[in-house]
Image 1 (cartoon, one colour):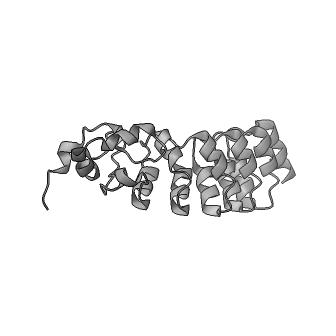
Image 2 (cartoon, helix red, strand yellow):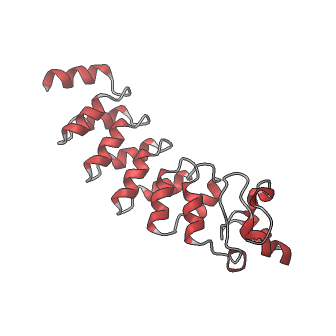
Length: 190
């Protein structure tokens, strides 16, 4: 393979990451020499390989670039927000990424895709409002994850104790956010 080694590009600034929505990224292809090297640079903050070099010309990151950015927990929220309308697999990965902006998490929690909602419930940065909505999900696995979540409110946990699935009830009963008095009453009744 011809060309410089990848290690010499590791110190490049994060504005070399792909995103059509970020104004910083439009600067990545200012000169012809930068255009030739854009595909060989690693982002310094999230180590996302941003090739091929044509992304700077089209303004559209490739599917592979979006997947790599979505799966890196150090990818800046601005980048994650800009790729949120990507393919289904990209949205699934964004749902699990703790750097994904809250507005995007909110939108992903309303997805028709069960895996996306599952990943939102697994995201420890998920807000109590989103958890409340997911606690009424048709999928019992999503409800069970909500019952384990550290940000789940006591009111939601109390409702999940009455869930028809025993695994969801058990998960809710083991959450430390559940008041002891409610847990004691549930244990006496059960």
